[in-house]
Each structure stands twice: as C-alpha cells, then as structure tokens.
Length: 320
Image (tube, rainbow, N blue to C red):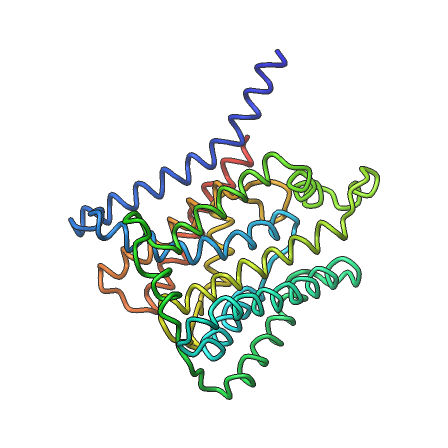
C-alpha cells in the first residue's frame, strides 16, 4: 500500500510536467505544419540560441518563485549589465573578463539587497524587487546618459554567435550547464530542499533548523547573477547595448516558470518544467511571427494562451 501511495504521489508530480512538454511539442508540430522549415536543423539551432537567454534568466525566477516570491527586477538587472558591459568593453578583448567580473560583483550586491529586504525588513518580494529594479533602471540611464554606447569584443561576439567545437553556440552550452547544475541542486542538495521548505511553510523552517536568511539571500544573489549573465551574453548576441534589451522578460520569465508547473505560491515545481515553459513561450512567439501577427495581437494571443495553459495545469493539479 505504501509503495502504491508513493507511486501515486510521484505520478501526480510528474504529470503536469509531462503535460507541459506535450503542449510544447504540439505547438512545434503546428508551427512546422504552417511553415515546413520550422523544425529544420538550421532553424532549431537559431531557436536554441534565442531560447537560451530566457532560459538562463528563468533559473533565478524559478528559485525565487519556489520560495514564494516574484522577481520584478530581473529585466532591469539584465539591462544594467548589458549597457554597462557595452560601454566598459567597447570592443576591446582584454576588457571582456574584467568587465564580466565587475558586473558579477554588482549583481551580487543587488541580490544581497533584495534578499535582505525580503527577509529582514519583511518587504514583499514583488515590492522589493520592483523598487530595486527601478533603481537599476535609473542607474542605467545615468550611466549611459540615455544613449547606450560601446560594443562587444570579438571574443564575446564569437561566444554568443559561433559554434563551439562545431556543435552549438556558447550561450546554449552555458544554459545547458547551468540548467543541469540547477536541477541537481534542487533535487539532490540540502540547499535545494531548504528552498522548497521556505516556499511551503516559512515559519516551520525556523523549527527545522534552516537558516532562512542565508537561503533567501543566496537565492536572490543567484537570481541577480543569472540576470547579469543574460545581459552580458545579450551583448555578444546583439554586439551593442540597447535600452530595449529583454523588454518583456519580467512577464515572460514569470509565465514560463508558472506554465512549467511551479506554483506561484511557492513550495512546488522545479526547473525541469520551466525549461518546457521557456520552450512554449519561444515557439508561441515564433508561430505568431510566421503568421505575420502585429505586436499588439501577439500580446493578446499570448495572454489568452497562457491563461488557458494555467487553467489546464492548475485545474488538473486541484483535482489531484
């Protein structure tokens, strides 16, 4: 009986993820039916490159949502990193990695501020990250004086756009490595279990001996670092800093995480589902581009489809 109950619980956890992957595959097949070249090797390579940026950013968003929070500073940290990197590197290869180190240090500081505000000052995560994001946006505008300058170095551009060892571009490789590390961390480490515990019952973590302050601050630092890496890699992809960089990433990342089966209330889900959520967001966008849909129309359709997917996923979970 115990084995049957355990198997049933395990199946209940896996089914929403299977459903999301099924939807992603179905959408890809529909896109290929409309445009026969959609699933070609060349197009899949291009999609993989584009999806990697959102995938990296969603690592941090997934962790924060698992703790019961939401990160609204993500887009602005990406933008700050992107614009700073462009002006600091300014095409010089020998500045690439020193600039990366500076950006990572800035992101760590942002993460510490966000995490400390959420834990010690008890500021709701949405409010805290919105405030810090607004500060980051203001700093970005002051730094570039409203007009981003500079450009990527040849090595950064090569990492973001060229195939490494003839296999795939550097951004995709970085995403795969970070994805594997995130999945293993959530499933196999004490830190990962602590993240779920905080999202499930923050008060109970005190009695379980979990250092909630350390866990939360670390989660927000990781999220800021992931945003910083995304902004840095974006520079290699576009070769210049733009104020429109990752403009929709706040909502796209939240949608991808929640569509992937992670509860918006925290405590359940994981990054395996988020990967499918990211894929769905990218295939949807590609499908609407194939149909020559206007940007306003894209937002309407995307919003409705997200609502439908959420109703299906959470409706099934509620029945279970």
